[in-house]
Structures are given as C-alpha cells and as structure tokens.
Length: 218
Length: 162
Image 1: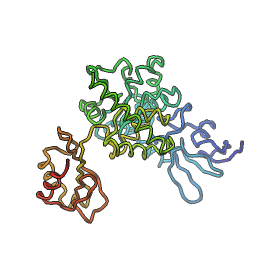
Image 2: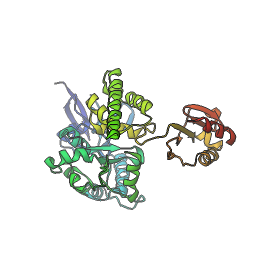
Image 3: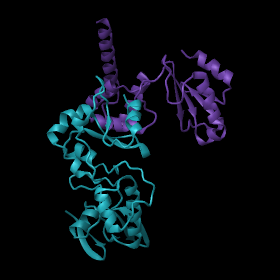
Image 4: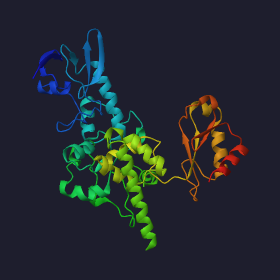
C-alpha cells in the first residue's frame, strides 16, 4: 500500500493513502476527541468535535478529521487556539441538548459550562452511533432517523425491533455518548389496542413528540 | 366476509402497482425518490403496505425508505384527500399577503393547513415556494396554479373539485 507523509502537531507522520486524518493521528499517538466515531462503523462526521486545522500553502481551513483523507505534505494542527475555541462552542451547543455522559466528560476537559445556551433537553445528539451500529454491524435495521433539521430524531420500528432486539441485548445502548440509557426497545413498546405504531421515538423528549409522530406517519 | 375479500383485492392491486413501478425503474436503489414520487402519484400518499412491498422489491431496509420519505416534505405518510390544495408561503408570496390567502382558503374549506376534510375531498397544505414568485400570492389546486385568486374565484374552483 502506498504511503503518504504529513505533519500533525509538528510531528512527521507516514500513513497509508486511504487513511483519514483521525486514524493517522491516533496511530501516531495523538488524541483527538470524538463522539460520533467508532472504528467498526463507516466515518460519519456528525459531531464535528474532531475538527482540526489543516494548512496547505497559505490557506488554513477547518475540517472534520474523521472524514478527511490524508494528503501528502499536509500540515495539521489538532490543538490550535482556533480549534479549541471551535470545540468549546460545539460542546456548549451539545450540552444544551444533552449535558450528561461523554459530553459531560469532554466539557470538563475543555472547561465549558452547561448554561451558555438555552437548554432543550432531548438527550440525543444525533451522532447516529446506535442507528449505524444496528444497520452496519448487526444488520437489523431496527433503528432509523425520522425527519430533518430540528425535527430529526431517532426512532425504532416496533415490528422489526420485536424480532431483532431480544437477540442483541441492547448493544446499541452502550455506544450512546449521552449517558442516558433508553428503555429496552422491544419491551418498551406500549400497546395501542390492536394498532401498533410504525415508528416509536427512542427518546420521549416531550409529550407532543409521540403524538406528532403518529399524526404524520401511519 | 365480502368486505374482507374487497380489502384483500385492494391490497393485491396495491402490491401489483408497486411491483410494476419498481420494474419500470429496474429496481434501482438510487432511483428511490423517483419511485416514491410515482407511487405517491398513483395512490395520493404512501401507505405502509406499499413501503413494505417496496422495501422487499428494492432490497433496502424499511428504515431507509422512512428516512427518505420523512426528509422531503413532498411525501405524505398519511391519507390525503382527493384534491390537494397548496398555498404558497414563500418569501415573495408572504409579502404579498399569503397569510390572508391561507385564512381565505381555510374558511372556504373548513380545514386548517395540514388537515384533510372528513369526506376526503380536500387536503390543505402550505408549501415553501412553488417557483413562480411573480404570480404571488399563489394557490395551487391539483397542480393548477392560480395567481391571487379572489374568494369567489376560489369558491368556484373548489366547487368544481370532485
């Protein structure tokens, strides 16, 4: 395999050409914080915490290292003042929706506070770890995203979950960076007479959430 | 019993329709949006049975279809009326008094945006932009566009709808 050489935090590093910046840095012992990354899953780039500053020529730009491929002669800074500032804002925004778990751990490291932004506790940062694990590793496809933008949320499909979740024993829960464990899906499906909802929210973050969901999806 | 038979027949027709459309698009996963649009053209909305069949036909997980179908506002996962009334609320229409148009249509149809009348005759929706801002405020009835229709004009148009 072809090798490329680049500089990360002033250290000369050689990495295989298909590696991402994150892989190259971790192989060289340089730590970059992540929330949505898992070695078993395809890179996703949703949490942006792994942002690093890259310089080629005169221009410096910010990229997500977990999805950015290595390049010959690239100069990477993983802890520049600009990066730290960005990470702090990202953490503060994440804390507004989910202040516990790994988000809390990282916020201690970066010294951010939970009350910078108005709280909207959904206890989900949409990192997609559970959804992707269920699809990519377990091939069960019991979890999925619904909606987009501020309405986007993780749901499970009771019909599929009833079949696949009991055999898996909630491996997706342990991946969750928010530190809040949901109820076990398959057992937690409420019965609505004979009608089973097509989708059910993993996080019941407000009373109307479920009603809205069933109103728009039959 | 006969009702059950009729329902079964309906189901079969729906399954066949979905299969036909899938075959037309060579069961290509990348054409999912086009296929969904065509299914919706036929049925007016996307029933779960159709999506289950589609999932089996294209060999993609059901959750993928729901992710796509809930991402785009054009898809409806709930039953819609026979006639679809869209009121544009894009920026140009908004400054040309789209809110007045919404209240006009709401009053005439007796339903709010996002609702379907109980006789399944009308569904009222608001949309982001219909792409003809010079005509604003725009109302579209079954994909026929009308520029700033008066109450009497709307009433006439609605009466013509079956």
